[in-house]
Amino acid sequence: MLQPVMHVLKQKYIILASGSPRRKELIENIGLQVKLCPSLFKEDLDPENFENFSEFVEETALQKVLEVDNRLKTEGAAPDVIIGADTMVTLDGKMFGKPISHEEAFDMLSKLSGRGHTVYTGVVVKSLDKTVKFTEKTDVYFGKLDDEQIRGYIATGEPMDKAGGYGIQGVGGTFVERVEGDYFTVVGLPLYRLCSILYDMFKEVK
Image (tube, rainbow, N blue to C red):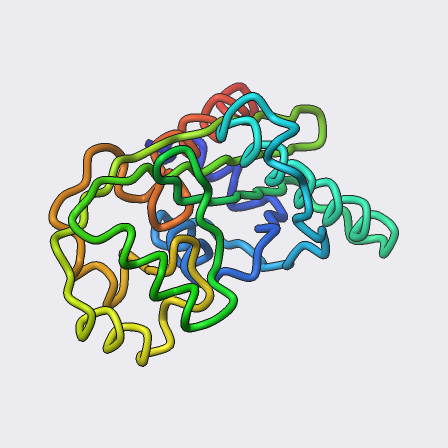
């Protein structure tokens, strides 16, 4: 999709406002070079202040981008493009963030077992003259898990830095019976929409 503008994008200084090697790998797999710059934004927004999950993840992603943008400008290293994202797992109207203990991870995975849940990823793309926000959501269905399987997974350490307590691109993917929507939304960066935005931003640039 990006091939007609790839010669332009390859000349841009692109920052990913994240510390996620998974998101970096996704972008590099489509031929772009990006630099990771984890945001220092505290991610302390109150979900109760937003009308829906989409607004919440978009605003969190926006704050990540703005913090990185301001910091790099102060350092004299202003990027051409900053991409930020925030991913949230939801079930029964409640948000599941990253578990802070093995007990919380066990509780999350037990609730997801044998059921479908919805993953939201909000993305912000900021260029020098434009800022675009969007959210994608994907439904993920887990098979039925027993306690031993959940404990065995937690013992791998993988759940502890993942929203909802699992990583679909890792061992956690073995729990997933099916996905309805963009798989990459669950990984943390919806590639189709992201590339559509980048194409529209730079297709007129010669």
